[in-house]
Length: 142
Image (cartoon, rainbow, N blue to C red; front, side):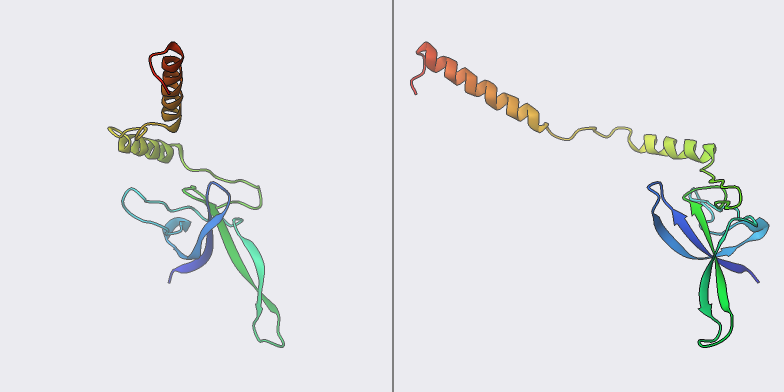
């Protein structure tokens, strides 16, 4: 039987965008995404959880239960270790692959589409000054 844990995934801007119950597979790895290029399975250690108060087992009497919550940075290799304060970042190999795929997507695409607004503004003022000079010179009567 596989064990499920409550996992919170933290993005680069330090906001939790995803959370849910995930299964722990072989060798203490959480099955978030398996297979393909998005393969990402962070490792869970014995000190990478926070226990929070839960509901009582029975509403009016009994001890309060505790639930464990795990936190991981997106694409991190391990969950955050709360005993040592270690926050693992993505592997350097994963970062290289991600950067290469981003660069490959941008090949052949235009950086800027259309003419920027300041070019049009400059052209308008140049035409205005040109018409003003023509009227001062007597070539154009306005």
